[in-house]
Length: 119
Image (cartoon, rainbow, N blue to C red; front, side, top):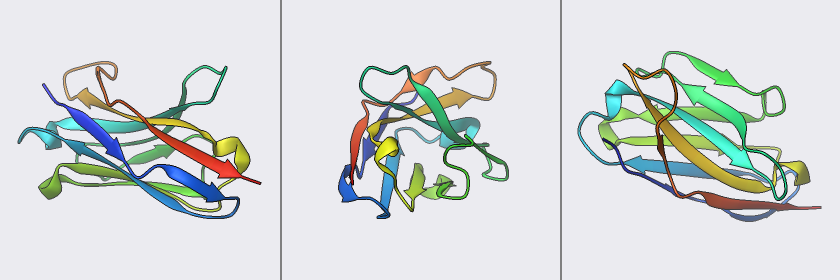
């Protein structure tokens, strides 16, 4: 069981940066792989980035690779998404999610945080 709370969204100009954070409850945070997803208005939710339990492996959607960086601090029970060189098409609600080491899919989700990138 884990509760996730995102923060850090806001309004930025194109080419700007934001850092999202996702704070997780519990002392077993390190047993969960973590991911970031986003959903733009009228669009389906899409994968953005993920990170393994130890932080040793990361994966990115092609649309954000080279611009976004996912990281985690297990001592702080927090996962981050550093977003640089933001584009208007990055505008979406961003969600963090957790997948237990014994689960085959993400089964815990945060409430989301809005990111808006202006031209």
